[in-house]
Length: 127
Image (spheres, rainbow, N blue to C red):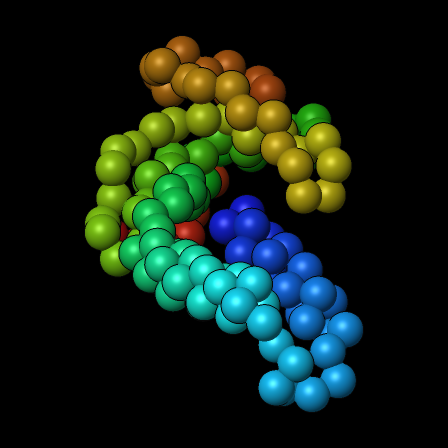
């Protein structure tokens, strides 16, 4: 995403810079150089955006839900898009804003206090 902004800024600057010319024949070598330079950046940037591998944690199974508050204990898989996955983890996710979560790693789910948690075992996406 940042690469998109990195590429958009030179395009915008060149567009504003080239708007000072009324006709195409008024372009000088500086305008042509910046135009070709931006064209190369766009093609190289587009190639890297195409093969970019950004990883995200995706929820597979909800194991427990909290009896007090908006918290869950879930199993997650690290996804790399078309390149597969890269590991698993069990975490406690507590929602503190609408979109944000506080993540606490859980080493052993056998030691979970069932007075605070309700077993759910709901599969979100199958493997």
